Amino acid sequence: MIKAKKIAIVDCNNFYASCERVFAPNLVGKPIVVLSNNDGVIIARSEEAKTLGIKMGDPYFKVEKLLKSNKVNVFSSNYTLYGDLSARVMQTLETFSPEVEIYSIDEAFLNLDGIEVDNQTQYLHIIKETVRKWTGVPVSIGMAPTKTLAKLANRYAKKHKESDGVLNIFEIENRDSLLQDTPIEDVWGIGRQYSAMLHNHSIYTALDFARADRSWVRKKMTITGLRTNLELNGISCIDLENSPPKKKSIVSSRSFGEYLTEFNELKEAVSYFVARATEKLRKQGSSCNSIAVFIRTNPFKNSPQYYNSADTKLPYPMNSTNEILPYAHRILEKIYKSGYYYQKVGILLMDFVQTKNASLSLFDPPNRLNQIIATELMDKINKKYGREAIYYAAAGMKENRRWQMKRELLSSHFTTNWKQLPEVKAKE
DNA sequence: TCTGGGGTCCTAGGACCC
DNA sequence: TCTGGGGTCCTAGGACCC
Image (tube, rainbow, N blue to C red; front, top):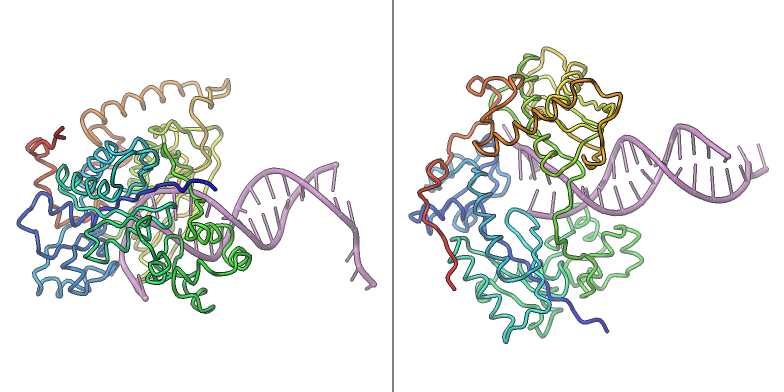
C-alpha cells in the first residue's frame, strides 16, 4: 500500500477584486468588479457583486446600468498590481513548504508530505491567516491525496461558511457525501462539453463519475478523463511540478481601443507584439523556429467580417526582436486586406529550441551578432528602467497609438506610488 | 453565453516511406 | 473483389485550464 500524498491547494478568493481592496480598505463589504482588457467584460467579482447576480463574462456595456444603480465599484484590470501581490502571496506560501507549484496567478499547490505538525488542519488555518496578515489577500485551502480532490475540497471550503475557508479531506469520514455534493461540471478537468456528454449518460456528480466504468471513461474522454476518474478515487496521477515548465508557444495579441483600417497602424501593433513576445522568449532562454500572425474584424459587429492568419518557418532559430520583425511584417502584408475595420491582431511564436543550442552558423547574415548584442542591451535597459524605456520605432510612438488598450477605470494610485506602500514583513 | 488573453494535452487522419 | 503491412511525422481540431 502506497502512503497517501498530502497535497494542498491554496486559492485566493476573488483575487483581482481582493487586490483592489487591499489598498482601498473603504471598499471592504462593498461590491467590486474588475474588467478585462479594453474594459470589455467582467472577469472578477467580489462576493457582494456575485450576490447582485453579476456574471463572469458579462459585457460591461450590458450591465453598466445595473452596476451604477447598485453602486458597484468598477475597475479596469491592473495586472501590474495583481502580479505584484501574487508574488507576495507565493513568497509567503514558500515559507510553509519547500515544494510549491505556482499553478496560476492566484493558485498554488503545496506538497505537505513530510511536514511534521501536531494538527494538519490547524496548520492549514495558520497558512491562511498568515497570507492574509502578510499580504491582505484572503485565501481558501483544500487538502487531499490528489490534486483533483484537493481542488474539490477547496471549492467546498469556499462554498460552505462553516468550514472557515479550509477543508482537509483526510478528516472527512464520509468522502462519498462530499463527492455527492459536487456537481460534475465543478470537477477540475471536466468542462462544458464533457459535462453535457456525462449528463446524457446520467452522470451528474463527482461521485457518479468516480464510480463510472473506467474503460468507458477511457474511451469517451481519453486518458485525461481517466486520470480525473482515478484522482477522484484517491489515486494520484497528476504530480506537482516543481519548476515551471518552459513555454512551448507564446502568444501576444490584444483587441484595440478603437478599430484600425490602415496597414501601417496594424504593422505598428504587430511590431509591438513581436517585441513583447520575444522578450518573454528570451527570458526563458529560448529561440523560435516559426511565427504566425493573425488579424480579424469584430465578430460581434454587423459590419463585413474578415479573419486571416498565416505562418512561416524561420531560416534558423531566432529570438531578437529586430530579426523576427521583417518576417512578421511580411506575413501581415500577405494576410492584410484593405477596407475592413480591424479589431484585433496577434502573433504566435512556436517550435522553440534552447538558445544555447542554437549556435551561430557560418551562413548567418554578417550583422547577426550585432543584432543579438543590441537586443541584450535593450532588455537590460528595460529591466532597469521599466517596460518600453527603450523600444523599436516600428511599434509606433507610445503617445500616438490609437490601438492601445482602453482602461478608463484603472486604479492607478497604488502602482504609480509603489514605494509609498507600507512594507510587509514576516514576524518570527 | 459569446464584445479577454494566454496557455496545455490528446487523438485522428493524411502524407510519406520502406 | 477487396486491393500487404507497418512505421514515422505533421497538422488540425477538440477538449481543458486560469
